[in-house]
Length: 218
Length: 162
Image (cartoon, each protein chain N blue to C red):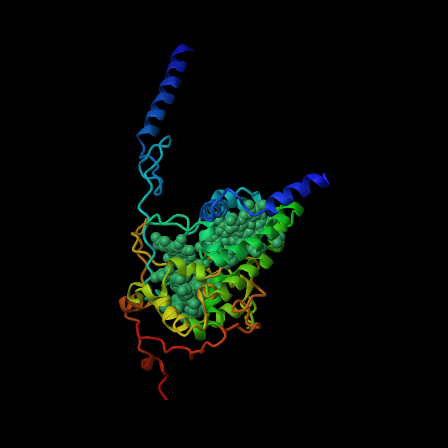
């Protein structure tokens, strides 16, 4: 066995005698493309909704709830998939998120949320992770579809107008601060800032906090 | 015996016919659709989302909600209404604060937090739509009634003369 390995190691180490430098470059280049493509395809598959709801933990709780919301069915028929909100489209973020996802496989094996009761007990913790992530990236996923620059405030309801033109403009809050629970049911919110008077709100660093706006005449 | 039996049978048949003649009971929600068939659902009215408050018909009327509440979670885990309407949130949201009755227990003591019987807002408050009422409504508000009976007095008139 040792001899065998040693022999092949020698072959590998030997500089090529019959191949031109160009061919080597070409072959490794195309091999690279193929591997990259396969890697990408594998990642693409893990981005599909059928992959996510392959696990009953995801299908019975969060997916079932999503089906009632505006991001699943609406007037215009445009919808958001799991990966639109949970896996950033940007490549580098994508890899980072996949590394984190290995924890979910671990959770699957050890059944951290495999009954409705366990899921409810763990829900606040899971939701917190998502909120922290979205707060840190300034709700990047939401903004992939909802561009603040393209929002026509005059077409929004007065309530939305007021909230967006004050707190979004000054970057006091980001989408997820005000729109928690947009896609699924909320966990117990009694320990979450803005939902409990005794917990001070977290403000984005560097943001200016406006005075409460004057109420516009109706 | 036979004539009696015939008479009895005739009587039963007659009353059955009379019953059938009576106006059919019409369920206002089903309309005229026979029981075995499925009625066509009425058009869904869009909830008004104009942020315009409507007048109240009487002093203790729970005001109608001038905005849409689609998807607002309201259960023991989360109360979306209080996210905006709670005392400490109205500065930012400019929502109308809950009136003091929402903090009172049934003995009239004012509490620091919302009274449990007022927690589920939508038992009393409803959204606004342009829907036609299903049944006629001849409600008159108190001012109209007073005007009709000639009993209306301005607040100034109500101050006892010195």
